Image (cartoon, rainbow, N blue to C red; front, side, top):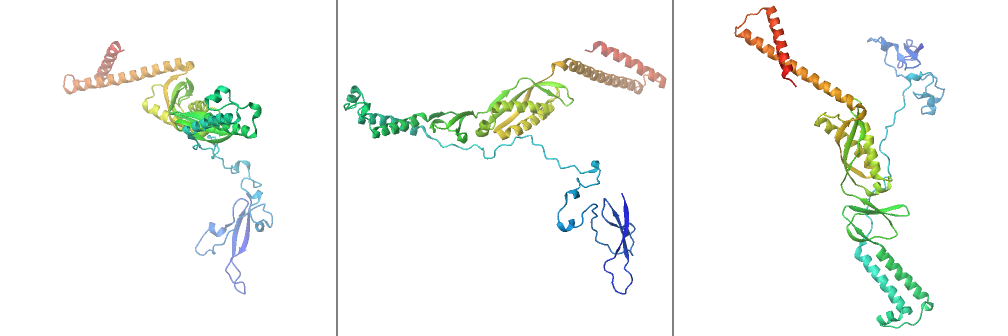
Length: 393
C-alpha cells in the first residue's frame, strides 16, 4: 500500500487579506478513502471536519460525470485486487423441488347427468327409424309392424334423407357413447388435443363428451410398503429400512400430466429421502424413531407436493443393519452391553463395601487404622466380586 500526503485548504476561511488558510492534511491510499490526519490525532483546537470523497484508483477521468459504476469499479473485478480477496458472488438458493406450470391446477369439468345422454341416444335411434320409414327402406315385416309399407330401397334416398340419417346417427352415437359411470374414490382426467379440460369427481351415471380423452385417477387414501431400502444412521453405518408411506392424490391434473407415473415418482422420492436423512439405529428408542419419521415425512411431502401428491406419513416399520456390517455391529452391541453390566456391577460392589465398612466402624465392632481399613476394603471387594461373578448371568 502506498501512502501520499497532500494539503487541501480548509473550507470556511476568508480569501482576502486575512491569514493564510490552515491546510488540512489528508492521507491518500489506493484501497481506502481519504483520511484527515487531524482525525488520527484529534484535539479540541483541530480544524473543522471536511467532507471526504472516495478515492478510486484507476478511475478514468470523466467517469463521475457519466454516472453509474464502471465494470472495473466492481469489487470483484477491480484491477490490482488479489484473487483471494475478491468478494464471491452471491450463491443462488438450490431448488430441490421441480417447477410446475402454475396454470396446471385441477378444476371441475363440464359434464351432464347420465339421463341426458340416455335421452339423446334414444332420440337418435328413434330418428334413424323415422328416417328409414320416411325413405321406405325398412323390410316389409318391419314396415307392417310400424304401421306402414315399404316403398323402395336405398336407391330412392335423397339428400334430405341422408342428412336426417347423419343427424340422427350422430345424436345417437354422442348420446350413448358419452355415458360413463363415476365411482367413489375414482376420478376422470379429461383432455382434448393434448390440453387439460378438467377433472370429474362426481359419482353415478354421467355424460361426458366422447371426444375427450379420459384418464382414470385413484384419489383414495393409499399406503405403500416398500422393499428393504439402503439407508444410514448418524454414524454412517449402513442400514436396511422398510418404510410405510400413507399418501393420496390431491391434484389429479398434476399427478397425471406432470409426471409419467406418480407412483414411481413417489417411490424414488422416498429412496432419495432415506439417503439424506439419518435413520435411527436399531434399539435407539421411540424418541429417535419419531424424529426420523417427522424428518422423512416433511422431506417427502415437500418433494411430492408440486406433482399433486399429499403425503401424510413416512414411517419406518423395520430397521436392521446391512448384511455386510450386521455381524460386526452385533459384536459391538454385545461388547457395549457387557461393559455396561460390568460398570453397574462394580458400582454395586463399591456401594456394598462402603456400607459394610461404615456399619462396622460406627457400631464399634472393630477399630481399624488406615492400613487395616485398606486391607478390609480390598478383601471385601474381592469377595463381593467373586460372589457376583458366580451368581451372575
